[in-house]
Amino acid sequence: MSDSSDESLVRRTPWPETISRAVVTPLQPSVVYASPSPDRLDDQYEGRAKGYTYAREGHPNADVLAQKIDQMEGAQGGIITSSGMSAVSAVLMGVLQAGDHVVAGDQLYGRSLRMLTQDMPRFGVSATLADPTDISAMRAAMTPDTKMILVEVVSNPTLRVADMAGLAQLAQETGALLVVDNTFTTPRAFRPFEHGADIVIHSVTKLLAGHSDVTLGYAVAENAELQKKIYDTSVTFGFTPSPFDCWLAERGLYSFNLRYDRAEENAKALADHLASLPAVKRVLYPTRSDHPDHNRAGVLMGERGSHMVSFEIEGGRAAANALTLAAPNIAFAPTLGDIGTTLSHPASSSHRALTTEGRAALGISEGFFRVSVGVEDIEVLKAEFTTAIAATT
Ligand SMILES: *Cc1c(COP(=O)(O)O)cnc(C)c1O
Image (cartoon, rainbow, N blue to C red; front, side):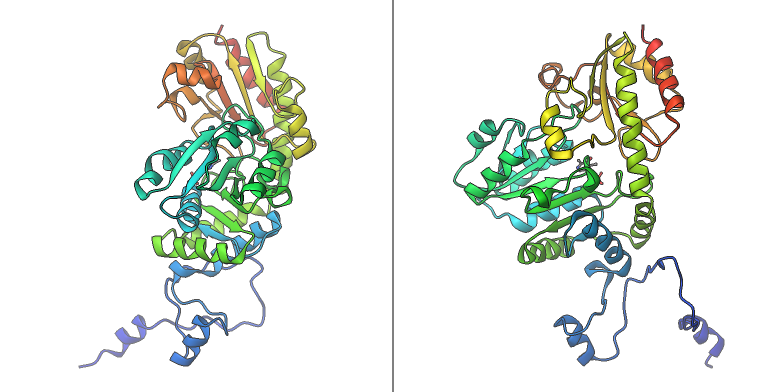
C-alpha cells in the first residue's frame, strides 16, 4: 500500500514565490544542485552557463564572500577555503612540483613554517627560511630551483616589516612567484598586488571575519591559469568551506572598515600608553618612531599600523602569569583579529616549540606579550593594562 503523506514529506516543498527579495544574503547549505538535463549540465561544465553542481566545487555563499575579498584586494576570481592553512596548502600544493624550492620569511605563522620545513619536504619541495627585512639574506637563500618567495608583510610576534620593494624586485629578476600572506596587515593597510605580489593569501578567521566564530581562508592569484591550479587543488584535496561559515564571515565584512579603523586607533593609543609605563621594557608598533622598521612601515602602509601591538615586561614566567591573572577581562588566547582585545604569550604558545635560545634570537622572552587590539573604549583598555602590568612588579 502506498503512503502518499510520507511521499510528500520526503519530497522538498518548493520555495515560496515572492515578488520581493531578501535584503540579507540567503544561507544556502545545499550540497547538491539539480540541473534540468544532461545537455544543460554539459553547458555548466563547459562554462557556457553558470550553475552549481556540488558544494565541494563551489557554492553561492563562498562566491559572495570571495567576491567581497576580491574587491578589497583589487583581485578577481579568488577562492574561499576551509581555513587559512588550507589556503596556504592550496597555494603551495597547487603551484609547486617536486624538486621546487621556496624561500620563505623566517617569522611566518607557525604552521606555515612547519608545512614548509616538515611537510612539503615529504613531497619533494624544499624551503630555506631567511629574514625578509634583509634583502641580501633573502637573495642569498635563492637557488636555481626557487619558484616561490613566501612572506608576511608584518611578522608575528615582533611586528618586523618585510622589504616588499626589494622582494618584488628579487621575484621579478628570478622569475619566482611572490606570495604574500596578508592576514596581519589586511587590505586596509596593505594591498600586495600594488606591490608586485603574484598571489595573496588570507586567514579570513582573523580580522576579516572578526568575531572568532569561523575558520576560513582565501587565496587569489593575479594570473588566471595559476588561479585555476589553486582552485583545482582546493577542490581535489577537499579544502571546502562551510556555507554557514562563509555566511557569517560575509556578515562580519560589512563592519570590517569600522572595526579595523577603531582597532588601529586603539592600537596606536595603547602602544603609546604602554611605552609610558615604567615596568614596560619595550613596545613594538610599526608606526612608532622607535620601531626598527618604522621608515619602511611608513612607505608601505602610510599611517596604517594595524591592530597588533607587542610589548615586553621585566621578569620571567611568574611575571607573565601575574599579568594575565590580573587582566581577567582580556581573553588570554592564542589568536588575533577578534572584535575584542586578546592577549597572547608567544613563549607558551606560538613559539613554545623553540628553545629558550631560539626564542631569544627572535627577541621573545618570557616577558614578551602580543596584543590583538579590539574596538573597546580605549580608556577601559588602558586602565586594564595599567592594572595588569602593575601586578607584575
Ligand atoms: C592564523 C593565521 C594563519 C592560519 O589561519 P587558520 O585560519 O587558523 O588556518 C595563517 N597565517 C597567518 C598570518 C595567521 O595569522
